[in-house]
Image (tube, rainbow, N blue to C red; front, side):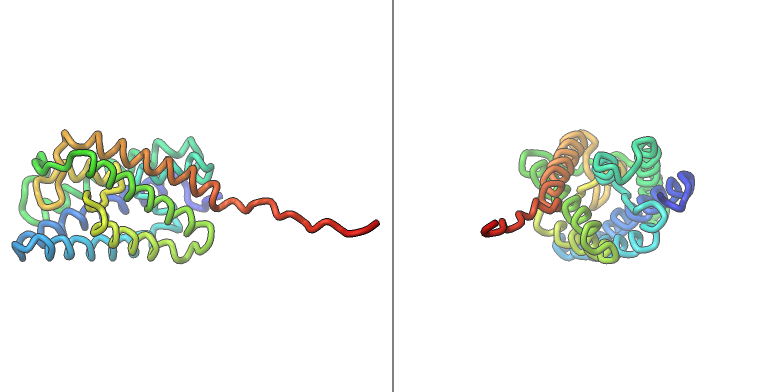
Amino acid sequence: MNAFDLPRRFAAEALGTGLLVATVVGSGIMAEALTHDTALALLGNTLATGAMLVVLITILGPISGAHFNPAVSLVLCLNRSLPARDLPAYLIAQVAGGIAGTIAAHLMFALPMLEVATKMRAGPAQWFSEGVATFGLVAVILAGLRFDLKAVPWLVGLYITAAYWFTASTSFANPAVALARSMTNTFSGIRPLDLPGFVVAELLGALIALALMGWLLRPGNIQQPSKAGP
């Protein structure tokens, strides 16, 4: 049983998702301001995001589990790690925190509080990328929880750092973060029109990971050698 009550876990999820989105959006704005090299800008965005994930999961994980992601909360609810009665609060906290993170990033760079993104991210390759990215993220989390809980912050941070570069979509892997990024017309934005395809792909990837890892991480029956003779 979690030692922290639901209001504290709600606050941790909102705070963590907000700081994560502020990092994604803010580092994208900073990178764009400092260089016209897209690869270098993406690298700056990547390193800041991966580092922040390690920090946030380490300090907030003991409070709420540090999901910061509706797909992760859904999976952990389905495998009974998160009580179903707590799922709505987690989802609300993540969405609200993500939007607050975009607002915070904009205010730090003297931009309008919210904008409508115009960056197109659509098509089968992008959707498949998001499915793969979220599948990998959920698989890493479930295996980390099973085998090495203390390593989870680093596993997630390193996985997202890598996934920024091996997926065509730059690995949103998070419906709440995708929604928050639709409200910034900067380096990390996504058109609201493209949002449904991303969210559906992310949820499908998460559910496939749950099914596969549920089987993979379950030890099989060990057959005992039969005794010879009477």
